[in-house]
Length: 573
Image (cartoon, rainbow, N blue to C red; front, side, top):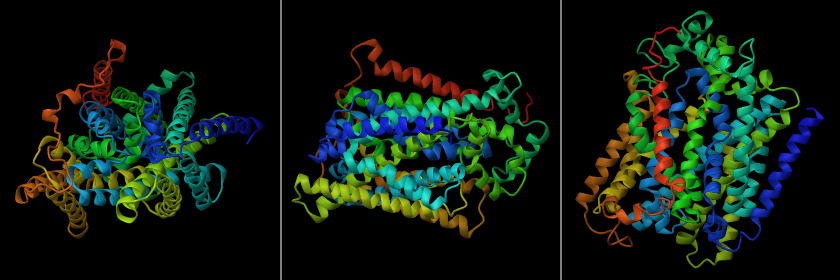
């Protein structure tokens, strides 16, 4: 590294430390301060920290890798998230803010009882550690190891300790404000890498020319690019020719079968955006409903633009190195996970490695600190207080939360080391586990907010039955040879969601008694017009409806452009 690299990195580190120390002062006085930032976060911090927590190294490493392997397909998940944000803004945010809760399990307890609360809390802790922290720490360690040559395990350990430290120090307020800073650094840094890469794709050095050249190569109708697609196609679909330029894929596609698109919104999208504690925590910490809604819309616009920053580099890598797909598929997957490092080595000018290191530290720090704080909140308020020490003082709760944060960091590091030894790509690993955990809990949320009679018996039946159904679906695929569409996790999630919805209704009808300790007159969508109409903005430029409508149109336009309509399978340039 050159002296300029160190200067760039230490300037970023100084800013991060300044923001972290300043925002974390006095945040250990109560659980409301430590876990919800005193409910005083403005919309731009809600949105910025949401993006920072959601977009991490698994996006830079995982999405670049999976888009190199599969084309523009991963953009669908990002654009689906934009649509989910709109859904959450209008249907779910008012209920979450009105409930004045600290954790999602607390909301489920009020609606379905302690049994559902404890079960969800346990599974959330499992998901936070095994899905989010593990993937982020592994991806960060992998990139640092590949770029600087350091041992992978030590990179993972160092990444976890540094990134989780801010959550231990200052709680959600530090997590949110440092997240806003890191979001700017991440998007700006990776965006700069994409610009440099596009300029190198054609002799003219033009960004537009580079973009068009990249698209032409990914259409893959001639030369080595066509050979690469033909070689990889059997690993992606059995339905004929493979099209890298459409987000809607055949029913057996491992990542984005068109059959699972709608149910992905209802199940994984809603679970991730509404019931995922480390994501929804900054919404619960917003000043009011308007700030929560506008923050999520800001995040929706970021997710709309994200594919042009993290998916496009994968397409550039394919245009540059289609030969990587001509060998063994397992080798190609591992090579793809190192694609981000290859792009940096080939396109980032000398003297900007410090910026890259700042981007990587930003990516890991924001997500890991968010997940650590969310996990500690659930361990403290949903496990420690109700089950171990109901009379705990505020000081005892915060102290336990600090130690819970340390334990979560250690568990995440251990799981990341395990993930580093697996053969599945990072992004697909995360999506597969999400699709297993999400459907049962998304089902009880949907049914509970649409049907007053839904009770704890129905919710427990749906959650336990849905998880068992998910396991049986997976097991059947291992024991019996099924049609190729059966193995796509999005299709399995759709089946599991349908089963869970049915079980929730049946369980409620078979045991209709009111669940002790829950709301006697639960709130549903149908009787909440006043609640749903709050915080929509009092001026046109503050209008939630206006900005949501623009986001909806732009997102649908992007999905339409990258479809068979504009890029039909088998068509030339």
